[in-house]
Every structure is written in C-alpha cells, then in structure tokens.
Length: 313
Length: 102
Image 1 (cartoon, rainbow over the protein chains, first blue to last red):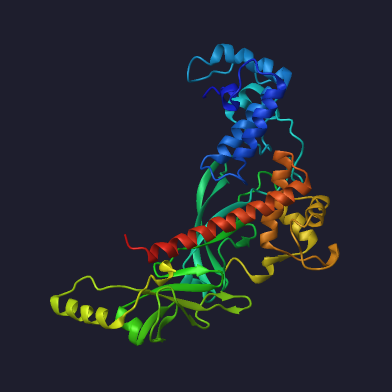
Image 2 (tube, rainbow over the protein chains, first blue to last red):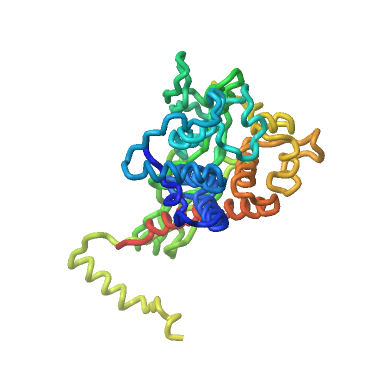
C-alpha cells in the first residue's frame, strides 16, 4: 500500500505545531470542500486533508505516525508493522472513507470525528445516496418524456465484496424540467451495508446546449441572420422553433440586435410558456461581382447616411 | 416508470428521513432561511426535492468546515449566486459567439 506523507498533504513542516497544522487543514478544507470547489479532484483532496489532520492533530496518533514515517517513507510501498492495527473493529459496518494506509495504522475506528448525519454510524443505516447528471435536450422539456438513465453504483456481492455495477432505469422527466433541478428516485441508490433501506438516486437535470437556441430564463433566443436588403425592405422568413417552423415578418428598416418576439414558443414553465426571441443579425454575402459592387456604389451615393454620427458630436 | 409526482414533495418527517438529518438540524436550517418550505408550521411544512439537496449540503458544510448556521446561510446564498452567474456567463458567451465573426 502507498505510504502517505501527511505533512506534505497539509503542506507543513514535520515539526509544525498544532496551531499551524489546524490552520493548514482549515485552509485546505475550505479550498477543496466538494460542495464549494470546482476542482476535479476536490473530493479526494478534501478526504486526504481530513485524514492527515485526523492523525496530526492527535498527539498519540501523530507520535505513532512519526515512528512509521521514519521507517516507511523511503519506498513507494508501505508494509504495516505487525500488530500495528491497534484499536480496530472489524470495520464491517463502518462507512468512513479513510485510506487503507490509515486503517493499517489505526484500525477502522480510529476516526474520532463528531457524529454527523443522523444514524451515521448505525448498523442499519440507509445505503448511500447517489447523484448523477441527466442530460436533457431542450426539445425534450416541452412535454413529459421518458428517458433511460444508466449509472454506476456500489454493490455488495454475496461474498460481501463491494464492486461497482451498472444500473439502467426508465425515468419520467416532467415537462418544463429546468437546468439544475433534481429528481429523486426512491431506493435506487446504493444498497445498505446492514439491513437498512437502499439509498436514493438524485438526477440532476442538465440542459444540453442547443446548436440554434440559447436559453434566457424561460425564454429562448435564436440568432437570425438576414440579408441587408431583407433588413431594408422587410421580409417574410421561416424561423425554426423547438416544435417546427414558423413564419415571421421582418419589418422594413430592421437593425442588427433587434429582437422580434414570437409569443409562446419558448420553454415550458409551471406558470406557462416562455417566448422565443429572434435576434436579427445582418450578414453580407460571401461573394460579390462588378455589377453588384456598382449597385452598392449607387446606393452609397444616394443614401447619404453616416452610421457614426454619434462619434462626431 | 420509477418516479411519480408524489415523490417530489416531502413533509417535515419525510424530509428528516430522506435527508437523514435530525429534526433539530432541519429546524435550524429552516429558521435561518436556508430552505423555505411552504406551510406556516412544522406540521404543515412541505419541502421540494431541491430542498433535500440544499439541506444536506448545508449540513455537510456545517459539519466539515465548522461554520455556524448564519455563516452557512450566507455561504449557500453566495454559492447559489456564483452558480447562477457562471451559468449566465456561459449563456451570454454563447450568444456573443453567435454574433462575432472572426
């Protein structure tokens, strides 16, 4: 098993005093708490810091650890000295997650943290809750939709070993599902270690970015390219919505950035439908020819328009 | 189908079960406005699934970082705001990208 250098983990000197160790731990705990941090290894780093602090804050454990560190830190692999598993239970019902290295020194009950969640250490506690992302296309949020979700969860086989298995479920996603919303599936989380009920599964809705539509609260936005002459003269164009195409009138003398509201074609919310906004973007053709250039020149001469008049004020 | 509508809302007692938190902790969390159930008193409180997640997160932060409830309320507000801003930023960036031609 791998030797863990708790001093290095907390980034303190081996002769650091308790106050320094506490401060170092608190800093790391704040930085890597999985509810706060975006760091991809946040959970791992948070646990590691907790484990290191658990040992180094306690004079007796620290002395034991220092002794082992003397012997064991030279190689990558660490062999626990015989009889060093001082005070362990069998660990059968323990759900903590300190490393094997920690357990080899202090046993599974070496952790003396205050009891947390209700029944955290009880034998018949509920299995672990699982949270997983559920990607949903915008189109799928318009009505109730049935989705298949696959996720991994820890499972205890008949020999009592814990392995990860794949599980697949059919789930009803209600119309109007919103980004970040959670759906709970009772009893679909991990098995209980004792005789307790299964944990629950929480699906966290993630709206998949759409190639055409952007989301703004319960409204949708579609950036709509139009030709300069369509902007000038007005036009009747077809605009895609989440549920098929729709005819829209572009008024004459439209501007880039102008928003046209298409009522009721946005996302579904509990309080009704949002709207779709077509945001106009005037675009130039990629190619031109002499005749067209000539016509633009005529227009330029006739129009007498200074688009930068604001600047010369 | 695995889920149906009645699982979306919880009574006070159900929330304690589902979040595996003791009632006095839930009461602290509600009294600090970290989650705001419908209903005037504990017997009539109704919680959403979202609140289960928030309550558990609040408790983890309280336990792991030694923050008092007032601080948790602030932390959760700021984390929510941060998440909202990040999302908004991402959405605005996407909209901007559609407008810019390099």
